Image 1 (cartoon, helix red, strand yellow):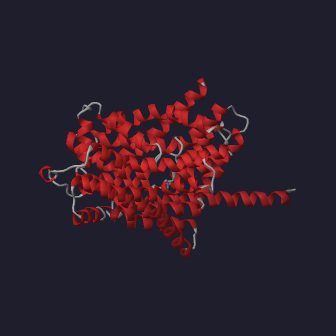
Image 2: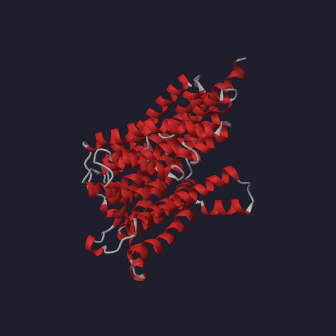
Image 3: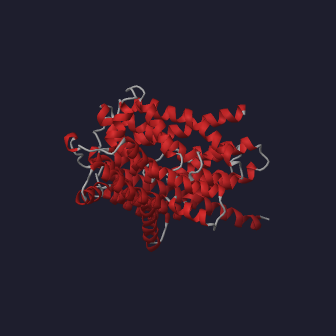
Length: 462
């Protein structure tokens, strides 16, 4: 009898030791990154690489596998995010130098007071962010945020935090973003019901984390204007010709419309048909942004009456300022991949699986743990949805949709140094790591906690 129990007990002890080692490796890797950036003042790209190395060594990964893992994560992130950042920077530079961004800002400002400006930014960000990826929304909105803050002489964070909140809450809760769509598919819940409830949850959450928190934190974290990201803008007297307000807004909305075409195709058309193939292709984020930039060169360039040489200079001049951002975001992806391949994701999943909680609470907690460990909201959503899917069977449709939303809510919790979005926001807004933790990370945590509270309330009354 004792001998038959010895093997399971030994396996349990070995498993517990491995859990401890992996969690310690994650903590050590994150600690190295924070110390190198904040204390040693080492460049974030090198700090992330050394943090990933520390994580892999402590976790016991072979060095050759560690290098392959880091470069794989870096390459994938640069491929997914880096191209979008570069194309978004080109579009932003075209909007700025042609006077299109000025035209948008001045038109909006004529109809907005300083008190209602943060609320207007939430609405604009939510409108643009509904069908697009978070990273695309950031690179499209940054020129507008910078311009609005400069023209209204408002703190960057008072304008920027509401825009980020509007984008992020939709990314976590509302289809057709990849995370919510994956949760709907894994849990087999109603897409339309999840979309409707997601919007209901998103509205009060974005208000609290956007205008309310933005106005609070802007008084406590002072940031210089981030106009360096757009390069030097021509003086007003040099902008004798500007594209119209309609043309400028059309260029902002064009990638939204193109990406929405892909979502419409996924929902309404059959694969392998000509219509589906066309809409799926033009709606792919990189293709949509590339087409938008090419069209903007003609529309905005013609509106500003730029010569061919001037257009070439404007497009080329957008890239040096964001080269560092792309490398840092890529390194963040390499660190995240190291966390995943080392097994930290599995450890958190296994530890949470033994908890006796309702699907609503369990889904949120699992998503929180995976999000904090891996930095990926989509990975957290997919993993948590797969775990709680058996518990959702037999639930009423509304409760099943709320479980999907709870998982999306948890996937937003505490974005920090292992999240590519953390570095994207940090670099675009010109913040230090500490300032980014106080602003962006705090905002993400507020989004997660407030949205989960609203979901619990809906669960009790619906």
